[in-house]
Length: 269
Image (cartoon, rainbow, N blue to C red; front, side, top):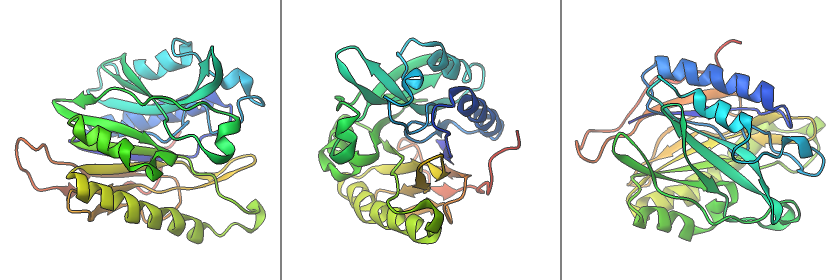
């Protein structure tokens, strides 16, 4: 299974602009024979305060969600992206949508909502097991990294791959941001925790993270793939927007995993 992990900077509340960039990436990776393309947490809406950007809080059946699904039509690719989902019962959810063949395959809601996020969002109950061409996969979202049970649940359900999508906001002043240190912090956390989960559960874990500067918040970037030995199969070299391509073997074939050439920048508009 060929996977593209998109290290993307999504503008807060700019659904139209974010979708346009997402479609450029889907078109590009599909032309490279990619099977699954993964965008970070809240990649459609941007990581936002749902009260401040209330117009960017979406129902599952809103047009932008279906617009994203249509991007996969006739491209042979499964795409995964995130948005802020309206919750009729209270605070909104942090949700990923999975689409393939031009239609929505399902949704996954973030389960671990803690600290400052709890003021804005409600915890979800996860989502179903998905698959592409017979390869089953599960999802985890950002702070789920600190809850091993989220990953154990996916592995017990039969996932061959677990995709961790993230947008960990960075502390400190934007004007004095040390991008190398910020990327290293998230890289070390993923290596330590996700590498261990991959080894203990015998699965692949792949990460796609928001990257760069938004109007009031910065994100560290980070694309990583950990194999069932706990080793890092491939990773992005730094915090800049880019795409990591990697081939994850189908367990039915026993093929050796290999890293594919990595794009150093997003496709041109």
